[in-house]
Amino acid sequence: MVQETKDRLMTSRLRLLATGLLALVTSVTLAQSKWGATPADSVECVKNLSLYQEFMKQGSYADAYPAYRELVRICPACSKGLYQNGVKMFNDFIAKEKDTARKERLIDSLLLNYDWRITHFGERSYVLGRKGVDLFFFRPAACKEANDILKEAIELGGAKSEAGTVSAYYQSLNCLYTNGEATKEQMLSEYVRIIGIVEEALANPSLKEDSREYWTKARDNVNGLFFRIAECKEIGQIAEKMLQERPDDLDMKERLLKVLGAKDCAEEPVYRRLAEEVCQSRPSSECKYSLGMLLVKQGDMSGALRFMKEAVDLCTGCSDRVKYLLKAGQVASAAGSHAQARSYANQVLQLDAKNGEALILIGNAIAVQASSCEGPDSWGAYWLAYDYYQRARSLDPSVSEKAGERMASCVGRFPTQSEAFFHQLTEGKPYQVSCGGLNESTTVRTKK
Image (cartoon, rainbow, N blue to C red; front, side, top):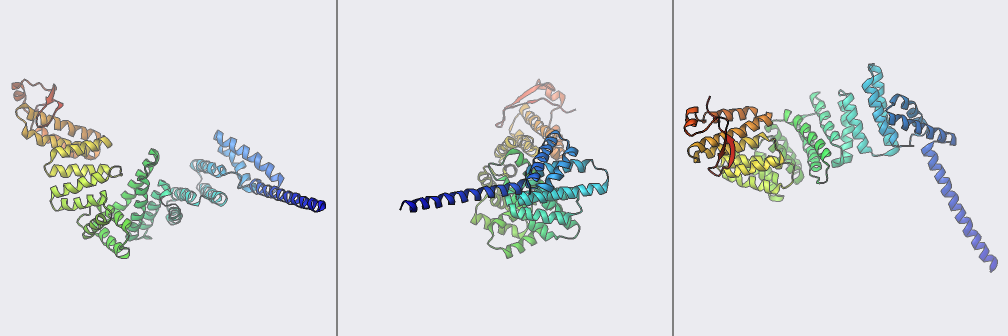
C-alpha cells in the first residue's frame, strides 16, 4: 500500500517534470523563431536591433540600413518597429535619390518592407492600405496594381480603413477610367460604396479632430473626381439600374439619394422615388432635404421650407448640418420669411464663421427690411447690409463676385452728401440702426 502510494507520487512528479520540460522547449523554440534559428543568430539579432534602433533615433538612415538588412535576413519577426521605421528610412532614401534606376529599386524595397510586415505581424488591411497609397504615389502609372491592393484593403477594413486608403482607391479607379480600363458605371457604383464608408467614418462621434479633417479631405477628393465626370442623366440611369438589381437595399437608396442631391439632380425621375421610399422606410435629414428640393424646383417655397426645417431638426450632429441650415435659410428668404432666414444663417455662422453664403443671406434679409424703415434708418439698413456683404467678400473668396454685386446695389441706395448733411450725418461716423427688428451698429456712407 505504501509502495503503491510512492509509485503514484513518482508518476505525478514525472508528469509535472515532463510538462515543465515541454513548456521550456516550446519557449526556446518560439524565441529562436523570433530571434533567429541559432544562439549565434540571436546574439547577432539583438546586436543589430540595438544598432538599428539607435541610428533611427538619430535620423541616421544610411547607418541604420546595414543593420536593417541583417535583421531581415536573420530574424525578420524580431520587431514590428523594424518595418514601421523601415518606411521612414526608404522614403528618405527615395526622396534623396537622383538616379532613376536606383530610385525604382528603392521603391521595390519599400513595397517589400510592407509585405514582410504582413507576413510576420499581420494587420493585412491596414498595411495593404499603406502599401497601395505609396505605390500609387510613387508610381501613378501603376494604377491597376495600386487599385487591386487598395480594393482588397478596403474590402477587409471597411469603415475602419484609413481616409488616405479610401481616397487613393477612388483616385486609382479614376486613373483606370481615364485609361479606358474602367467604366462610368463602375465609377458611380464604387462612388456610392466609398462615399458610404466616408460618411460612416464621419458620423462616428468619437472620431478625433485630426482624423475628421483627413476624412473630410477624402470626401472632397472623391466628390471632386466623381462630379467631374458624372452628369445627372447618366447618374439617374445608373441609379435606376442599381435599384432594379437591389430593390430592397435601403442603405444603397440612401447613398444614391445623397449622390443625386449633392449633384443637384432633383429633376431626375428616380430622385422622387428614392426620396419618398427612403422617407417612408427610414425618415432622415437627407430624404427630407431631398423632398424639399423637389418642391423648390416646382416653385413651392412654403412647402419646401417645411421639409427643410425637418431636415435641420433631424440633423442635430450630422456632417451636412451646415448645408441643410444654409438651404433652409435660402428657402425661407425666397418664401418671404426673412427673420427665419437670418436665424438659420446665424446658426450656420456658429459652425462656420467664414461662410460667405450665410453672410450674404443676412445681408439680403437686412436689405429687404429697409423698406419698413423710415428716414435715415432706411439708409442705415443698407449700410448694415453692405457691412455683411463686405465681410462675405473678404472672408470667402467663393462668393466674392456675388458679394460685390450686392455691395454695388446697396451703394445705389446710399444718400448723397447733402441728404446726409440735412440729417446731421457725417461720412464715416457710427450709426445705430433700430427699426424693423434691427438693432445693430454700422457706419455712415454716402454716394461718391
